[in-house]
Image (cartoon, rainbow, N blue to C red):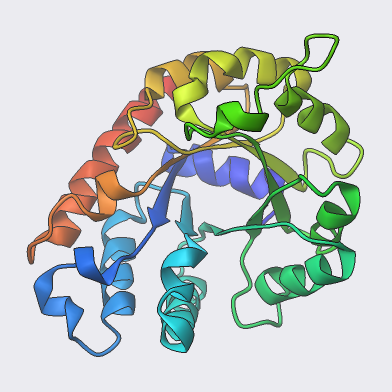
Length: 274
């Protein structure tokens, strides 16, 4: 999906919501835990209930890899279902990969190759190993690399906010340097919603790039603050909510509850987009 395609989708649905498919069998409704293809059934119900209110889905690969071969099969079923929908949607492999060049090439092929099993639109990547660990993800036309820049976890203070002798934090160096590896048409950045006040500094460096913003909802991030500091003329944001939507209920009404929570966020986003 190109940048303009994504912008058009955001305008059409009046939403920049990304739903995180962090599907944990232990948290699914009881009637699905022992069902055949229960993870896929859960994902399908969530997708059907929320697709009118969101523009993206972000499966967290750890939740599928933890289930072994069967988990990857559930992920493939999910991606096949998304690709078969008549309504377009942006897909993100939340994989946080980062390795030397030839290994990154394999990761890119595994998740981004249009002829592969998954065919995601984007993948999250850790930039710590530098250019040769990132650029292999930029070779597929219409695909995106989403670099970890400023995350919302407590450990972000261990490295990302440490300053060099000129007083610039490391995450800003990542933003500046990464502009040599990609551009606004194939590179986004992860910036946590709990660091919303720092979005002003982020926008000073990447004024028009799309940002993937986790942390709204269950993690305490403020949508209003994110929009105040990060919204651009073309939106420029994908705001993710996972637990607050997919686990809004653990009963048989889980899909209806997810739909209500997604619609609430979509209505708030529509107001900000105006």
